[in-house]
Structure formats: C-alpha cells, structure tokens
Length: 139
Image 1 (tube, one colour):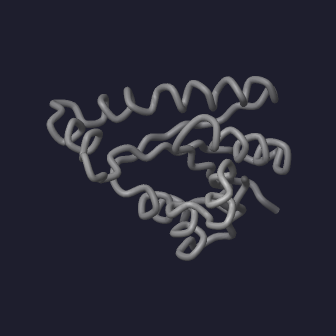
Image 2 (cartoon, helix red, strand yellow):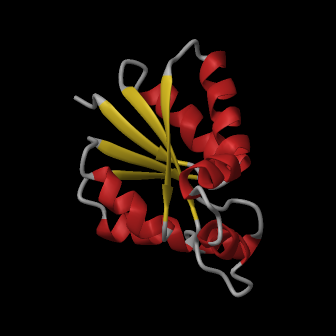
C-alpha cells in the first residue's frame, strides 16, 4: 500500500498533472510536494542569486512560492492536505535523495512539443533511473 507520495514540481503546469494524478490515484496517502531551487544553468541566474543571498532558505522559499501556492490550490480542489518542501541544489539528485523517505515518486514530464514527447525530461530521466522507490512519470 502506498502511504507516502513525493511529487516534485519544477513548474505549475507540468507539476499540476503529476499532483492531480497523485491525489486521484492515492487519495489516502500523505502527499509532499517538493520544489528544488538552484539548478545551475548557462546563465547561472537563480543559482547565483541564491548563493549571494543573506538568507538562502528564505530566498529559496521565495523562488518556490508560485509553484507551492499553485500546488496548495490544486490540493484544495480535492479537499486534500499536502505538505510542501523546498530544497536547494541539483533537482535530480535532490529528488532521488529525498525519495528514500517515500513509497513512490510521481513526477511530471514535458508533453508539449513533439521532441519533448519523444524524450522524458532530463530531471525525470535521472529520477527514473536512480530512484530507490517506484517512479511514475506523468505527461
């Protein structure tokens, strides 16, 4: 029986599908929505500003606010309580590490463009390949 579900959300649209699936497929499970901040990019924008912040936790939570607010609004539609969590670092690694405390991970993947549909997103692929618990990829 699935009693603890981790739903990583990078953005509201892609994550919403995964969260809705989790709430529908596992209505009695404790659901935690995880947003990871600080992924290095070519421009280093978010990671750099996070590193330069006086309060890294508060800044990360600020970056995650839109995603987590959206997750809470979706959960309210199902009359469900969810937990929300923010981590910093590389998303794939952070999700896999956090997944050890859950029964399953339900993650969204790109579904828009043809190329996106051919390949699972990089983070979802990392989670799928390295996760210590079962993973469902929702697109």
